[in-house]
Length: 77
Image (cartoon, rainbow, N blue to C red; front, side, top):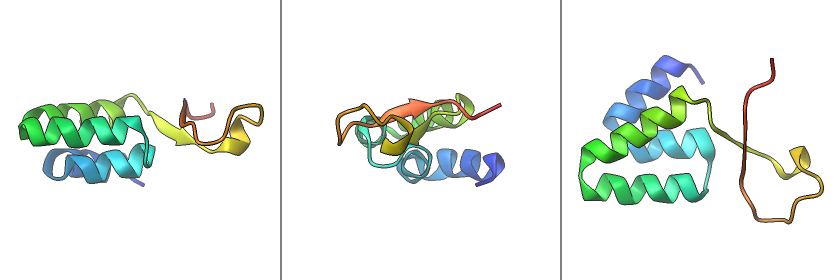
């Protein structure tokens, strides 16, 4: 997904942006709590997720890892 669209989502719908970026993970839950505490903290957190290129890796990226854990990877290259 285009980073500009993700940035717009981070501003107007922070939890949706967080879910698209990292999936159902701890960062998504943190973003929901921050958004409920006041829109600005959730917005800043969602923008940080997009700008820092955090994304949820699949379990196949970490074969030796226990199932159910969310890992974060940087893009290749």
